[in-house]
Image (tube, rainbow, N blue to C red; front, side, top):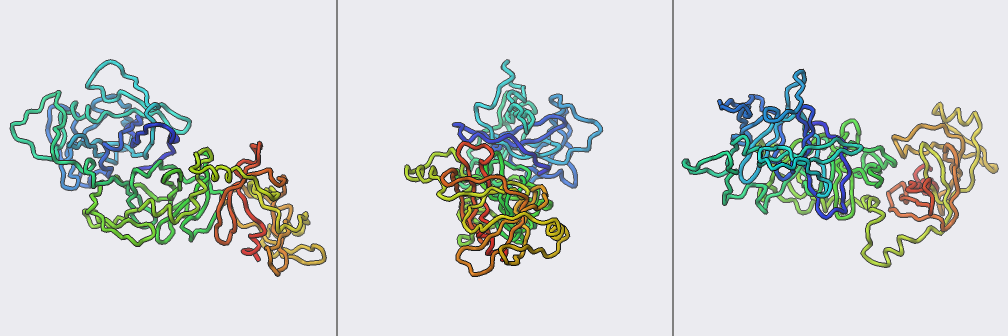
Length: 488
């Protein structure tokens, strides 16, 4: 697809949700029900085949996978404030309804948006079967108002579509006719056919089930870097929820914000994760027989070849969540628990104190293993700034001083003014000094709740929430003593 933008948040508590594809034609933002969008693709290199017609809505015929799809221009039916000086539209959207397909020309395909039924507003109340835009999705702080396209009415208004089954030559077509219902199911209606969004992730093409896609948004700021060679390469935050940022490309090219600027928000039960991608290419309907299964792979459901022989790897969303324990950090705090003892456990407070410190942003560390805190001398700060080896004297010992690793790549750079002296638990190694900007608070025992998981060399990672404190809500926990294992 073209550039994708951040769209309004989903409403998971709504009784019924609708997923729309967001496109732009001229200065108009349009939403189309995803079930009526078959494919998005570039304009054919050879252009459109002209078909003379009395009405001016039809601009040509496109050959899409062997199907002759009539392409109409919306701006010829309704005023859409087309900028005459703008570049020519570069995308076609193939729409389907009741066994027929039709295409429209758009300037950009901007992503998908999930909308609750009660969020859709009907604005045209006079019965008019030629009205193409009857309802809207109101604007939000992060997205414009979207006009919902009535695909069936567009077909009736243009009186043109491509029927998937052959019709008898004598079948009349009238202005009030609807695209004929046929006993042959279209791919979207076939119970053994599934719709996928195809993304370029690094150098590979991945097909992701659209029923798992919540949103496509820019990659958020990272709060914890887990390593560019890891599948879960960072922890970020979206709409107030922490979530793992995941790169499933073989070469881990999608853990680079420049190469993969978009995040596909995937949902599985109450959990979310952010799949970082380079580009959204198209929607496809894949019959079950078109996918060669790979049952023993960690995350693959199988492989499907497109008509030109291009390989598309089909993602198994359940498998991906199963091998991504970090996704549990996205669980919504207000989500109901299944067992009463789980609820009691989540309400338990931490029996140890926590030290809150500033290092680009605020973090919290349990105090076990922290031996002391000292101010850094001007000369030591200069050594750190210049990248030279730094040391400090503490209780008759000379300790190596190291900077805190780059946990948050997007965090503001601040000068280190203090050092926390730490020693790994049960370690015979000498203590080590970790430079931080400053200490900001002390959380007494039983004053905070914590949830989290273990993440390799970083030790225990999670979130801390101090009771009744807005300033200490969702602080990232970094166990400085555990970090001594990695830094020593």
